[in-house]
Image 1 (cartoon, rainbow over the protein chains, first blue to last red):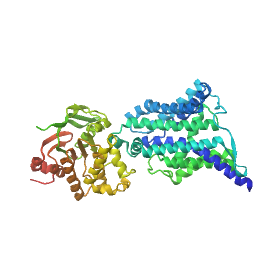
Image 2 (image 1 turned 30 degrees about the vertical axis):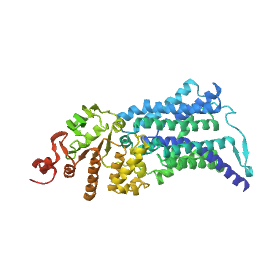
Image 3 (image 1 turned 90 degrees about the horizontal axis):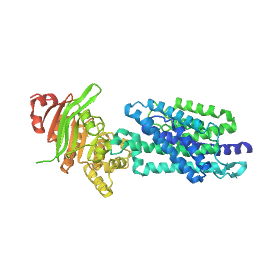
Image 4 (image 1 turned 45 degrees about the vertical axis):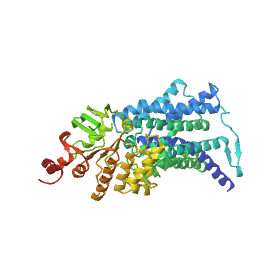
Length: 298
Length: 239
């Protein structure tokens, strides 16, 4: 029994740690969805930009962790704003059909991915060993928690908390919540909606970069790393697309489900369980836990 | 002589091949209430949306106090126009307080904003009671009051209303129109678009009658109320 209980706790810790990284990505997804009503699949690309920016700032230019991470966050945020400006805005001005935005976002994702393949190569890179503290803490009963688990959990909580503060306490946060409800009417309030959309993409890009950096630490860095956002997307759908608390809850559920499956059944069954969860959710409650509107979700 | 506050010159709007508005002109003087009446599809809402920069105009110009009006939505609001949209369009997941606060988005002076809360509560006391409630829980009449209050929080020179009587009980419509009169007496000019021609004519000083995108008649509201054509077509009474 000792083995099972400690495995349970171990996998719960691992699941929360993984889920917190998913949450950072899923919240960015949901934020964009709540305003523009399309799933931005280029989000994975933003994440990769963040990862590589951090890698090169650390290794090539030799900056410290703080400056490198800040630079990565900015790089990702700016990429997101430029994507919106060059790929989405021209479409938005011509048609209200959001399906075209979805297709464009897939295109952007492919472009970003292959830009890295062509320029820096497809080979796997790892962030330097000393990027983050690497200690492992022994908890009771043989359960361990690595320093990077703790850092990613804490960072996720901090960034999600900051986002919550921004949305609930600031003038632009209120404007974003109003726009999520009715973007046309938001314009009637004297809100510069074009700027608001850029702001939302910037914030989503920053969150993607944080997720990207922690994914590169946990796994490694390669141009297709962004494909992991499929998981964050599923988490956002389970939680209810467009709902930020939903995205967090969905992410934690997904992280736990993956790690518990890996711990008690088999590592190879992880994705099977994840996609089964998605199918079950769509059958029982298509709007997700916190989603309200049951319209076409694209 | 009274000052011209808003002027629309030869406004034309096309939706594809359909002419929604052809060469419509309108003037609004300072302290005036002007209404635009007409049947469904006459181009009333198109005119409002064009004025607020939400619909692109094919021809014509808008002037506010003599200078051309911006075509950008948020700049128009900042220059002093504030619209109560058709169907109220309040932000239902936000509280009443947040709805009012967002109305004042483009303003900086906190003291003035605080005074305006009090002004709006004096017009619609129910909003003060409901302040912490989600706007979606309000009744239709209360939502309309909130929509008007929200528009006033922008401290507009001109308050624009698109079908404020839509879907409301007659007693509530009368209440709201009474408050609109008070708002006007406190110095806000009003431009009103209404299918409810009688209410609109009773409230406004002057009126324009639109028919399929063209001006049919204009004049003092009290004259239009007695006009036999208008009576027959819009007021539902034969002369």
